Amino acid sequence: QVQLVESGGGLVQAGGSLRLSCAASGRTFNSYRMGWFRQAPGKERVFVATISRSGGATSYADSVKGRFTISRDNAKNTVYLQMNSLKPEDTAVYHCAASTQYGLVVGQNEYNYWGQGTQVTVSS
Image 1 (cartoon, rainbow, N blue to C red):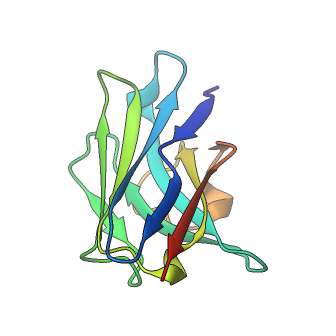
Image 2: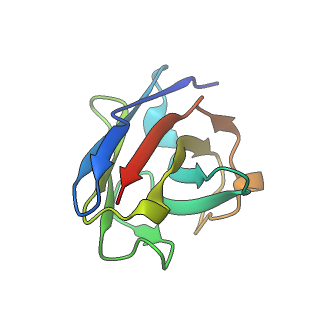
């Protein structure tokens, strides 16, 4: 089992940047594929990005491709989401999640563990 705690959210102007972090407990962090999801007010939670166990493979939602970068540091049990060129429509609660599945995993039902989330607000 793994516990996830996100940090780094906040209020930023459009065009700005934020870096989210997700710290994981336990000694088996590198046995999980990690992902980021977001939930905007009044909307369902949606996929943002995912990264393989080694960090060598990543995938992004079309809405963030070219602006967001997911990375991980297995020595620090942490996954990151660097968000650049932020837009008001990026406003949401961002959750990190861990999956025991292999291969490309973008469905939230395929993730076993979730953090509580961190709020990101982008003003216009």
